[in-house]
Image 1: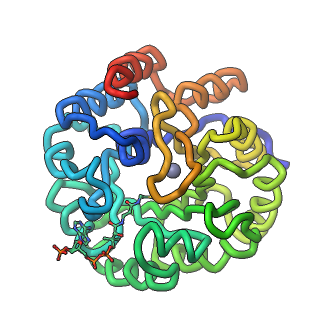
Image 2: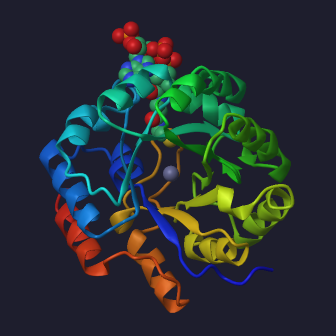
Length: 286
Ligand code: COA
Ligand code: ZN
């Protein structure tokens, strides 16, 4: 077992994963102010929005405007989620040099979420590969439903291996393993990481937990013990997934900060500024 990492990198996904899944649409100006305050809190990476179909995710239909208006800090990586070439073109128009693509370990979830199979999603990404290279893009790859699928139930750890291989083949820089509905237990996480990390390096992975059953922090702790040092979270724990019945919010960024503080792990995040961002957005949330 590794010793715990000295530093953790938090990927703030509230403005995307959070806002896509709440019923009400947050006003564009409020999104911008929220993201600017998150930048002041020095979150190392902020997933700002997604360039998906506005029919599917109307809450993020203002992706272009938000992306253009936010104040970007040159020390922070700003990322946009994209499902296909059209999304990539929109992200390039909005000045992104970092994007995230997404697929799943469960075919049923993939169909419900992006209207295609896992295999077809990989083909979509392959069509973007040249553009990624030509534009020197940093690319993150999400794999949803690694542990439990809302439609197929408990997943076998082996399911995720070919998806990881396909993403690495595409030159993806970081793979975020998602517990989309927050049902993974610490033992589930151990089993899957035992398998994955017998084949791959821990520094290629991030973990993405939702806190539906209060396992997220324990699961992060397991990830740390396995040498993983990048975790996705959302300010205030807002979030879910509109196509994953039962999903509740992402683990909150504040609770990840507290855990790191307890364990003596650096994050570089200003927790007072983070609280200011949470307090600001709270009034817009039911
Ligand atoms: N941005 C904006 N519009 C897009 C788009 C994108 N990235 N991709 C496709 N569209 C539009 C097409 O132009 C087309 O519009 P039209 O009807 O006016 O001609 C329409 O959407 C249908 O296009 P198609 O390629 O057939 O897509 P689809 O209906 O099979 O949907 C996705 C595929 C991936 C675009 C859609 O499932 C999607 O956006 N899913 C996102 C889900 C998500 O964000 N989930 C949460 C993240 S975990
Ligand atoms: Zn999520």
